[in-house]
Length: 92
Image (cartoon, rainbow, N blue to C red; front, side, top):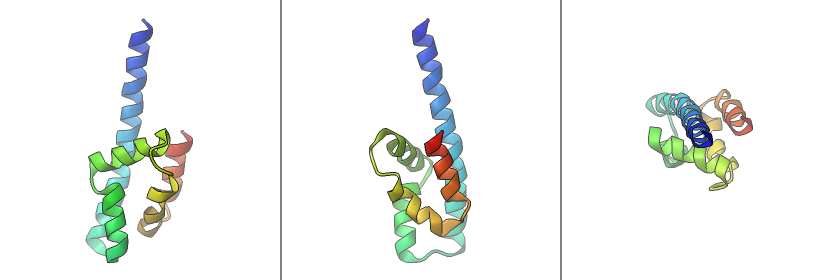
C-alpha cells in the first residue's frame, strides 16, 4: 500500500516538473527565435535547450545536482516572468 503511494508521489513530481519545463521551454524558444545574444543563447541551450534538458535542469536544481542560481541567471534575459516562476518551482 505504501509502495502505491510512493509511485503516485513520483508521478506527481514528474508531472509538476513537466509543466514547469514546458512553460520555460516555450519562453526560451520564443526568445531565441526573436533575438538572443550569442553568449546568452549558449547558456540558455545548456540549461533549457529542450524539454528533456529542462526537466533534467529542474531535477538537478531541487536535488542538489547544481546550484539553482546557475540556470536562473540566463532566464533573466528571457523575461521577468521566468525568474519568479523558477523560484516558485524551487519553493514548491
